[in-house]
Figure (cartoon, rainbow, N blue to C red):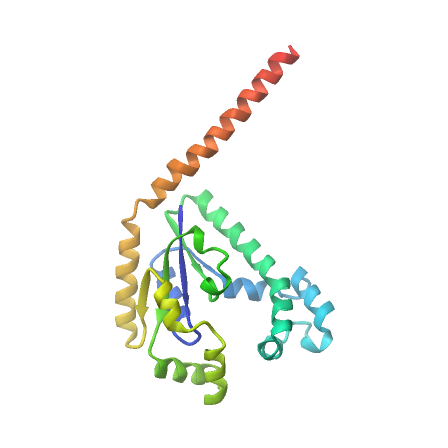
Length: 232
């Protein structure tokens, strides 16, 4: 199995592309979804956030007040580092578990939907290809204002807080231009997935890594056999 990274800028339509990929039968591991799951009431990250930031960051139901916490860490770099230290180990731990489960199922490849793919740089060395969902500046701003009910100033500040989209595009292997119609975007996605499916990279991985695993397994078996013989 091999891994493909999917990312983009805020408001560029990455979630739309991710959904299209899933509709084509490709497994997608969604880091945003995992980030929401690990802070559910009673979870390890939930407890640490409550200990660190206090009850004021939680709703009466016990759920994390995500918009309030987001606003806090957005304006405070130190608090953003603190929340990342709490959540990132849990997020990447769950990503590894899901990758392993898909590996056991015999999937050809899995898409990792990671908003901070290039910023964190934690998994880029493990990826076969990277895909960036892009759009023009005006479209990005309009989508963000409509989706989150931001003022223009708020939306611009959110966009500027991220790695420039142009830089992400320069780092990507594949770019999906999502400024136009959904049908145009879907056509691009279908072409990309069709191309990736023709790759034999999963066979290479099986030979290289699978062979290494088998060599270790055989060595362990030999040691056990000789150990048993010695006991006899």
